[in-house]
Structure formats: structure tokens, C-alpha cells
Length: 570
Image: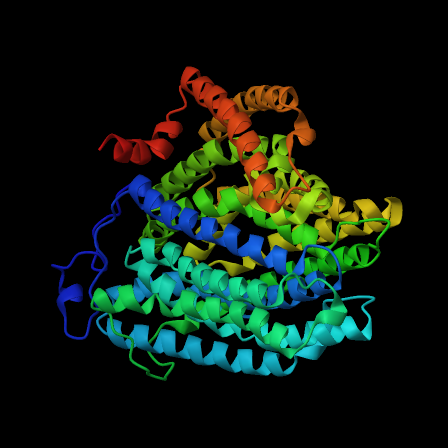
């Protein structure tokens, strides 16, 4: 896919060559190549993230008061950013930045957009940091005074990450609008480097500290301070590619002439949608925290930390491929939507859904079959007990992976048309279904299965969301969505995935199943056993899947793998 030439991407145009205009974005290099660049960066950052997570689990574990307190506190800046800034920034910034590059006062508009956003996020961060104690109490239930105290201190150190998440988004969206996709995906590597060093120092100095009575100020400052310093590095490193490309951000306040009047409605509806969505996440967090609080020396029950580890693994395929493809398409979709080119928007959406589907359908099958060995490989420090708790949650979450990829791309199409209202109203039944599933679990299921049910409820809400967004986009795009090709593609991939899953399950049982994983002999052996079982079974599944897709003549497979294979050939 090549973006059409316009003043934002053509250096020879008058708009691009006028005084005070930032260097324009280079022409699009195509969906495949852009996706490979971003996927490579994401893979590198995720690999480092796995090492970071493994060291964090070694430091505080996945069960007990310390692990749950840090998980909640370190999750808060992500949740708060999603509520207060993330959705609005993503919904507003890319369309407005695309417009700014085409304006005669491009530099002024970009400076004001970035300055106002940064100042607003800084003020919100300061306010929420001061309210850490109240926020921790809101997100927890049934905690002792000691747990609340530790969680609050962690939150004081972690919530400032909110500002750096915002800065990372601001700078990254400018780079994406200029079609410099790589740095945004590679920047988290800086976070991982800082975190691995900091957590490594923690383990050398303090060792594993899973008991609440062991915690003191030096432990708290080193652990939580490292987490925040890593996010700061992730944001600030983006200044390097921006400066090298010739872009300069000047501190400039002011609202006039930057196009926020039309964007205000989108921001408000998006804010409302995210608040509603996070209300569901809040309830899920409280349910998981209540379940985890029942864990003791005799009975281990999955809680927040188990859910967080399952979610981390579940999001790996989404972040590696889906986000890369959606990001590469979003700028072009925004340009086409603003130009009134409905056919181009429909074609890009169809292309994205089909290409993403080839990957997510297989990823679902792989996670369902290989949940236990994948967990042992990715989180070896969780041990046998932790792995047994995480794997079922991962299986439940996995059934929502296919709609997750589709709904993410669809939401960005709504944003390209500056339509936040539809996103909000679709979020209502989605959130209600999540909460209803959690309440049903509390009423009718044993507490040991609540977190597994939470994963299933989350997957169900994804399917409801994607179905409603499909209906809405069909109306928005002239009554058709190229649904025949999209459904045919998913039918073929589903059949291929089922056959590959059966093959992978057979091999998994042949090598011994869960018993093939080595626990109790150190995390290195656990990781290696998880690696070889996952690699062997996964390779068999992949070969069966690819062969079947070739027989079914699924051309989207070539689009997904073509750029990668070309690089290997070179």
C-alpha cells in the first residue's frame, strides 16, 4: 500500500517548502515493509520486556501481598493515562497532525498542539500523584492497612510515569504522521535496558523480597523508581530521531488556529468511552484482587498478578503484528478519510483485517494449545504453581485475540472520521457484558475460577465490540465493507488453525504435556524446557498452518511474510 502524494508527504509542494514548515513525511514505503520495521522494533522491545518481567517476578513473585501491591501501583499510570489522555490523544492527534502538515502555519500548529497536550498531562500527573492514597483504595478491596500503605508508596513513585507515557505518545504520533514508524516501536527497548539494570541491582542487593515485613524505603525506591525511570527513558529517546529528521518543537502556548474546535467533540466522546471501558477494568481488577487475597500457604488462587502475567503473554502477538499493521495503515486511512476517498478507506480496512486475521487466528490456536509451556518459557520465575494458575487464564483470554486485532483497526477508522460518538455508544454494551460476566462468576462459580472467568468475559466483550463496530462502519462506508472477502479469509484460516492445533496438541502430549516442563531445578531449566516444548509444537503447528493456507490460496499470507522472506533472501 502506497499513500497518495499530498502536501504533507511531497517535499516539492508549496505547503511543504514554505517557511516555518517542518520537514514533511517521506512517501509511504508500503504496508509490508513498514509493518516489518515496526514488528522488528516491537519484537526487540518485547524480548527485553520478557527479561524485565522475569527479573521483576524473581524480585517480588506472582503471589502474595507485595506482588499484588506493586502490580496495582505500576498498573495505575497505564490505566490513568488510558482514561485521561491516551484515547483522546490517539483520537485527536493523528488527524490534527496530518491537517497541520498541510496547513500554511504547520510549525505553529504543531508547536501549540504538542505544548498544550504536554502541559495538560503534566498538570494531571501532579494532581493524581498527590491523590495516590485515594486512587489505590479505589482499585483495591479487602486489603490490610499494611498492604494499602505499601501500595500507596509504590503509587507515589509509579504514577509520575503518566507524564512520560503522554510524552511518548505525543512524540511518537508526530513520528508516525511523518511515516517514521520505527522509532516509536523501538523506543521501549530503552525502558527495558534501564529496568533490567535497575531490577538486576535490586536482586543483587536485596534478593527475592516477597514478604510484606521485608519492605522498607530503599527497596521501594529502587524497585518503583526503576520502573518510572524506564518509562522516562522510553519517551525521551524519541527526541533523537525527531531532531535528526530536522523537526523542532518550540514551547508555544495558545489555542487559536490549531483546529481543536472540531476535535473537541471527538476528544470528549473518546474520553467518555475510555472512562466507561476503564470502569469495567476497575471492576475486573477488584474481583481479581479479592480472589488473590484468599491465597494462602495451603491453597493458591489466581489473582491480579496471575491475570497480569496472562495478559502480558496474550498481548504479545497483538503488539508484534496487529499494532504494527494498524499503525502503518492509520495515517493513510486518515488522509483518505479527510479527502473523502471512501473506497480507499474501505480497501485499506479490508486489507488490514485480512492480513491481521491470518496472524491472529493462528496465534489464538497456538496460545490455547501451548499456554503452559509458553508461560514456563516467558515467565520461568513463576514456578510450577504460578504457571498452573496463569495458563488457564491465558487460554480464556486467547479466544478474544481475533476480535482484539479487528476492533483496534476499526476504532482507528472511526477516529480517522473524527467520530468519537459511535466509539462511546459501542463501548456501553461491551463494558456491560464484561461486568455481567464477572458478576455471574462471583455468584455461581468458586472463587478459584474467578480470574479464569474474567479472561473469558474479556474475550466475550471483544467479540461484542467488533460485531457492533462492523455494523457501524458498514453504514459509514456506504453500506458495504468487503465483508465477503474478510469472512472467506477467516473461514479458511480457522479451518487451517483447527487442524494445526490438533497436530500441535498431539505432539505436546507425545512429549509428555505439562510433565515435560522442568520445575524446581532453577528458572533457567524451567525456561529452557518451556522453550523447546513451545518451539517444537509451535513449529509443527506453523508448518501445518502455512501448508494449508497455501493449498487454500490465501494470498494475504504472502503480504504478511513477503517482506520478511525478502530480507532473508538478501
